[in-house]
Image (cartoon, rainbow, N blue to C red; front, top):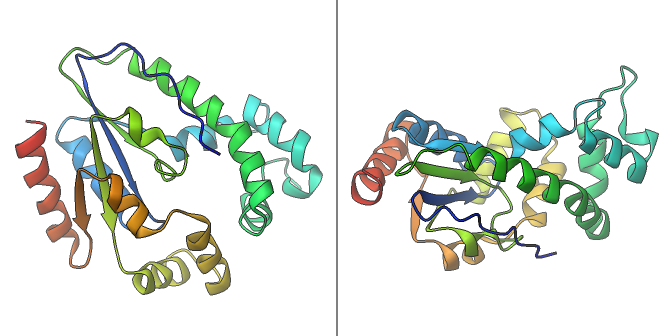
Length: 207
């Protein structure tokens, strides 16, 4: 699926697309950019908010996927949902078709409040897959070796290795993200080293 949001008429702000494979280190980069003064719009965080019980995304997901993706307490069972969509491309496309328009609408409202001259960072895991990189002034891609990403998901997030590899397989390949990047940040060392790359980019492109 390749649905583009309509770019609001905000030529007075710098729009930066931030992406990378799961567990590549995007959260470290987005946090550092926020420390520099950027407004970080986290697509995953917005999606989670829209999937809270009673929210429009929750109701739409429940209507499509049924009670199997709802926990006993009424909250969305994200683990169950992930197992369904990352094992079935058609179901993943269905979920994206539900959530992406809702996330884009919320993002547009947030963008409208940014003052002229601001920097807006769109933290979007599926930036390339949905074609939204075409709407950005800059594209930052965070990369880390696949083996390290699997280790982080298994050891830090408690994910089964099979599920971790399924998540990676469902996303764009590193070379696809690299092909649209204006800058690639290599997360192969320490957090401080990654932050130093972010600082260098900010001073060169956004300061």
